[in-house]
Length: 262
Image 1 (cartoon, rainbow, N blue to C red):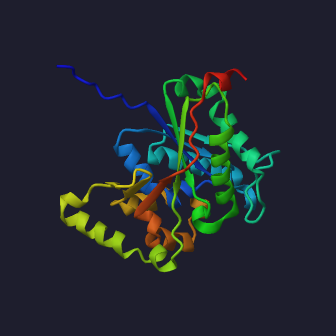
Image 2 (image 1 turned 135 degrees about the vertical axis):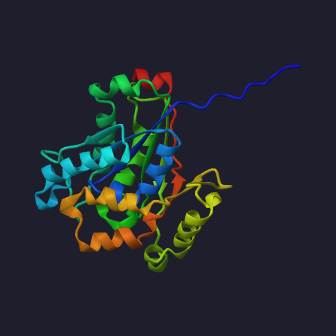
Image 3 (image 1 turned 90 degrees about the vertical axis):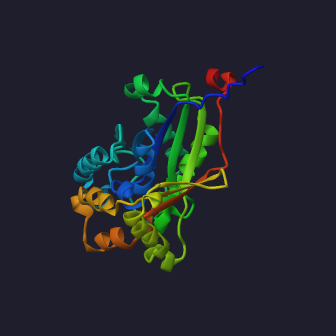
């Protein structure tokens, strides 16, 4: 009798790609928590220091503090100085520049000893609505999408995939997430509702629930310069505090030997 051994899963490195310091705390906590509890390796790449109001240096320090609190193994923050990728509420970024910035940051020499241990690179970012509609969020999504198609760096893992955080367009569901509040209440009473990762029948979709909303508050509180009253309300009422719905991006690339030698 022949025993068939199922193929082993590739060793994956998950990288959260965001536009500004505090994006991770406002929108992605359920995903971060679920991946950490699953024992996955998690890095964060922030494309700017959030220097639109001249607070870039302070916000970068706050980002480092938040990344430690949330358990990221590496926190990579790109400087806004002398780059075309600047924190701005209305200025669009050139998508090829974003894609190149992602590749350059991840393929940097100082990360090679760590990244060489992984067979797959999984990027997590916004969707084409940018969650909050911020143009920098949207261009981050477009840059990740372009990176999947065009990246040829031999320094990066061969297998690439990306997941996008689904934006909630209905304002009632966005700011009065009744279903998430019900799950939160049930989780406090019944242990069977404490599972923060929900398997969807759709393999292109993942749902993560966070039953520790105080984690969002504590993470956002590390961003002292940004934790103003309306962001405090956002943390309490936003659906992203309690659940993330991730969908797999269509463009998934596996490098070939030919690509690496070009």
